[in-house]
View 1 (cartoon, one colour):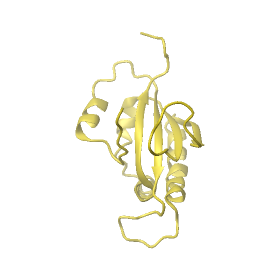
View 2: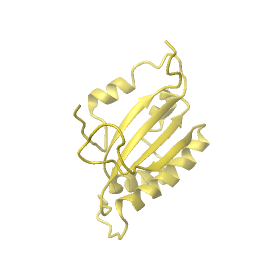
View 3: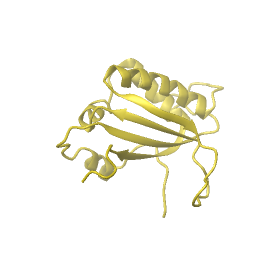
Length: 142
């Protein structure tokens, strides 16, 4: 199995995300996060923040926003080791965010709110890359 951490989805991934969401049910985004050692802001601002600290600023803003739109952070934790399997490098953290639906998530992917925009700047500064795994509740439902 091969994987590649990224900060943003590619066109094919975006297209797949925006395909019809017929059941309009909640989705869970599993975020496997890899942080930069030191935050790097695109606007050139000086900072002493680590990547993890910058991402935490984004996390606070996003968690508040999610709660306002009917979602929530259901789980967040540091990754400590792999107990089964093998990868070359561990992710630093895992976060599971519950969104009310794909539609609601899609509507919030390109924010215009100044607080959310600043949050996304912290996200970009802190993340070296990530894997986002879209999932739905109901493991054995067909």
